[in-house]
Image (cartoon, rainbow, N blue to C red):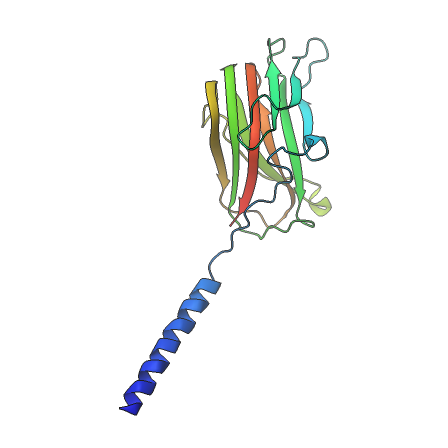
Length: 202
């Protein structure tokens, strides 16, 4: 009888050890490596605001504000608006750069970018989420990857805050930095609010 008891104890311990080992090997998810994604601190140190393909003769005029007019949580967002398209190629984007030396990203990791976006009378090509990465000096800072919601997910019209997501399945081993973009695309007018931006790693 004792032998049966000891065998049962050993069997249960073995199952427990196997379960723990299996759990230990599961991919660990890092919830968010974006700084100030909730926009509750003044964003100018964390988010750069840029124009793409700037026209020196007749550039589009964009208004970028740190706003309390609308927010998904709790009180602030970044508001971008444009009243008229003067140049078809000009666009505006907010960017945050992440260096793997400061925030390591394992090669092959799956990346998921999320943002909550509110649009008010946004017409034209609309709004886009994007992310990409670059190699280091040895690779002459060449592009390592890029992906975007442009042409895949329409973010236009008038809608309250809604979460949008973009994934990239395998972070390249050669990438030493990456960036996330909140883009106000060319040929677009209206108002957009960006809030609760996150980038998770699995």
